[in-house]
Image 1 (cartoon, rainbow, N blue to C red):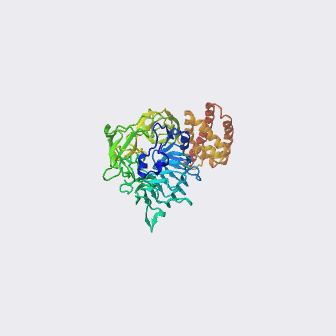
Image 2 (cartoon, rainbow, N blue to C red; image 1 turned 90 degrees about the vertical axis):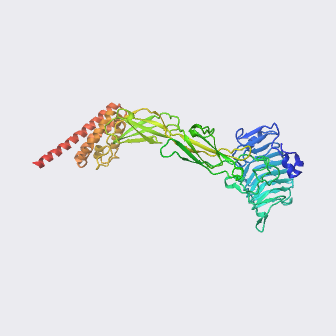
Image 3 (cartoon, rainbow, N blue to C red; image 1 turned 60 degrees about the horizontal axis):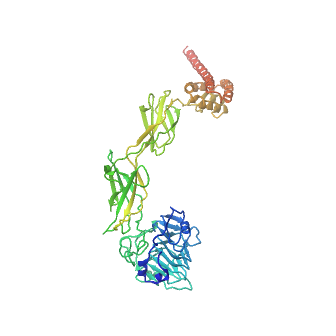
Length: 600
């Protein structure tokens, strides 16, 4: 596994680092969350010699280690463990032997790691971030090696009751207490501490000046990239670079102090944030272009004045996520990924945007309005918008883009004219972009993908048209002096548009008359003459009474016959319309006689 008993721990620090190893040959790899949902489940299923490997993510659990089962995160900067039970240590090694725990960030802990009566325990390349009580606690009967870790802003970084807790290449930043021992088991804080870095630890300030502990300590600002984002990589100019013991496996130079140095650091640069993407196509495309800009990765193996790393731009059309297999940039000469060098912007030119045709929607309904028709249709997956088609003889006579909606009102139509309507879906080509950072080492280690940015560019692709429906716009504006919005005569007769009789007749109109062509023609005729008849009876109590008498049986019949065929209902509507016409003719006749008498 890692090393052999106490003889290893009592060896000089350099010898310790030279013989460390994470796993034996033939070990079985257990992956979290690929094989197991939790770290503890993977540990419990493992046997001696197995290795549990944990993918980046946040795992809320308290874990207990098992002898000869290593537990490693894939990326220390992005693999977090937080306690499920706040009162318990996040990681416990209790009567276990020969275990490596490494490449994690432990957050939100009271006690992060607790080692009890355990031997040959290695804590490597781990960040203990803001433990409320203790970052690492080691009892008197345990043997632990702490290698290339970071203890950041903890109440107590390390409390150890034995000199067999060796600390090497580890950074102590902003802790209240860096290294101490419990009452009754005093260990000099500087014993077994080699090549560690220190800054702003309260217990190590001498008249306000920072000091360190142990041999070959380094005191100074480590120049972490972004602690708030969890990125504890170090920048160019950090005093932690090449000041540890042993070698860095990443670039085979002298080991750095901190969680990304030494033999067992993960090699992946911290991922970049999502790029800013803008359309650079110009005023009259094509050609189409896209400009990407991004913030640099400031780790010294990527951003370096003497030997910088580089960036890659990945892209594809119309689908999110890897594989980013775009091929059309540069008119086909710049397939994904595109090497950007050490620049932090790039313009991809001569893009060839295209999108598959979307499916046809289903046109569900047409609602006649005054000089307009309201359409409603079903949504289509992946549609970015819709196009409405209409005409008198053909739907191809007119079209309008409706946007990303499923209802649209076609205005400017002629009342009484029958129109044909259909709808088609549009799909806008969309580019999906992601970035990676590569370090300057011989292996050019590459980060994980950045979050995506998208850009819609180019003309949309139109799918097939929907089914066709017809509709005829109709006048719906009531006589201005009447409060009712449609049943003019009934409102005038019964006194209010909310009267029960009026509501029955409105329902009759909506359910039966407006659903057939003859019925709509009848309603159109009623809308022309109804306001005149309503005005005639509104100021004449006798006429209002007479109309109520005439309408009441009709209302009763409508209530009874709502389940009867539409033809019967239309006949009843015709009777009502004839009544309206009779009243309207009487009104015009009376007006003509009055005018004749005045002329005489």
